[in-house]
Image (cartoon, rainbow, N blue to C red):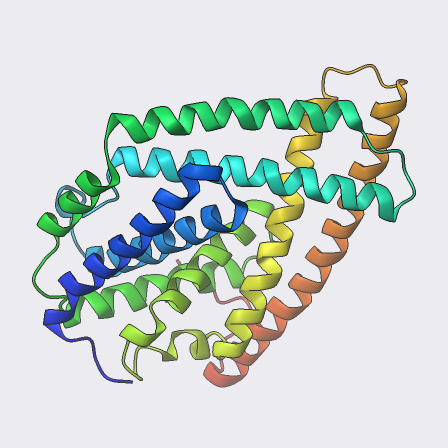
Length: 287
């Protein structure tokens, strides 16, 4: 891979903003699940690029997503989670031969409608065009070699700190996925030396992709459990629908536990490869 060219920075930001804008306009029409996904995907790729540009910069000089864009991104993300959760609940109910929890699904739809109203309000407060203009205007003319080195060094430190931990929490697995996703989004922008980051952790690109996808499945289980817990926390435990939802929750909890065990094994395998390659002592700690 060739190193990133200095003139490529502004075109990348403009291109990502153009793709965001297309999906932004489409999702506001019908709030389609796939349009929301594509919009958020392009925001994530843009944000990963900003992480690269910001590497080594002081807080006051960092380029961040405008607050209104971040708020819009979060709102449509919550809407999509609700949409997918409703689909998962119906699918699992059928799969497990349980009664469809109609009231719960209606609660989800009601919450979706509330968020759609919030999203429309956010769209009226400031246009995406304004946010993109602000980003383009603040972007540097070039990305420095030092920034790339800083990004790789910091990413490697965070990655290995998680992999070498004594145990993995839900939060640390979520952070690990973010690190891997950022690097995968930036893969084509980094030269062959810097793409040694995952290899230095006992991973190649294929392993990064598979692991990030499984971590995504794990995060989906976490989100489902959060929705169930919100609803079940103040409901009488003997009602028929609560019994159904409790059964669904128990099933998801079991799936999550099983996947976490598989992830732990795969991550420990990466750690062992790292130790074999570097001949580090088993109790080595990344600070």
